[in-house]
Length: 138
Image (cartoon, rainbow, N blue to C red):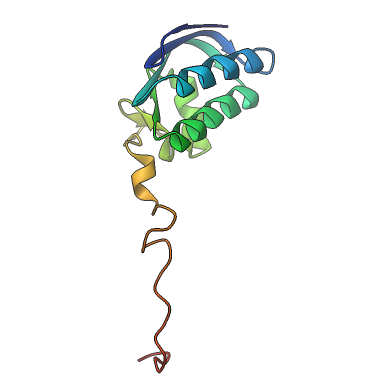
């Protein structure tokens, strides 16, 4: 496995699996921590990944979100697109372009996953308590 690029765009080559996960995690986290805005991860030359590799991608996604960044997957190979659809992670991760479901239909790629959830502390996250005297069904 080889990762090249900078704090804004990286390209992954080879396999992202249990044997390469620790090194990949270190490089990806350093890129997230050292930049701002979207971090684009080009997967065009990624041969395969396993559950551990998928965990590295998800961990990087969460870390980026905590730092106000967004991980964007680019050029996701077909086999990996199918895995993302099967695990429904295509709904969480930002993916450039369309993702195909197992039946061949085009599904919209996630674009702004954080925007779909209310922020902690926002009014949508903490509904106002019922007022005294309010009754069920009123």
